[in-house]
Length: 224
Image 1: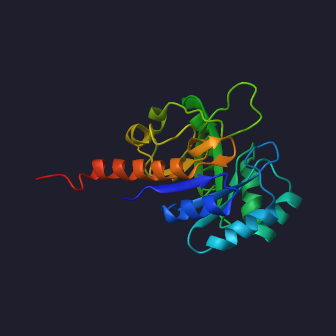
Image 2: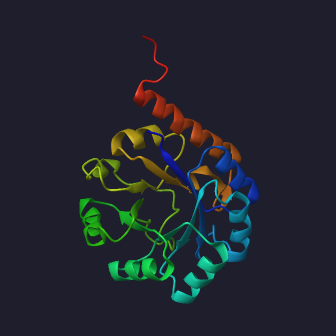
């Protein structure tokens, strides 16, 4: 099965076009002023409109209030809302009811106990995103370029839909897919030349590495 790939933290049309042309399933725009990948809703709308219908558009927020969500949804018209803060199950239910959009709930993972937190969101969040816990002193809940022990995900029920995130790049993605069994990926800092600046070459390399890993796992192209 083809791996779903979300390129997150996009800020330029050039990067959006490259992500889509490489076969991204999702593109993410981050609405969090502390992040170097923050983008204003009006600017994100321009980028989203350029590829709408060809890829799922994800709006990433961190404990956003109703006014912020209203502006983002009205302006960007995303396909998915990603909640990357401490949003409660009740908050997720409210967001889904108000906006009528699927919700991806992000969780910061360090050990097995962190994964147990998803239990309260089962049947509420449409999908999960598993990212590494931020390093000490970081103001960012994600996009820190660090990973967690991917073996923690190997025992998850196969019916649980999630995206793997955190420290992924072309050099480690085969191991990440092999160890975790993930079928969907989220990458941001791993395809950047510096925080917030997407590198088109690194994006190409990431997609290529994923496809090579897929072929190796399916045995496609192997000699008889």
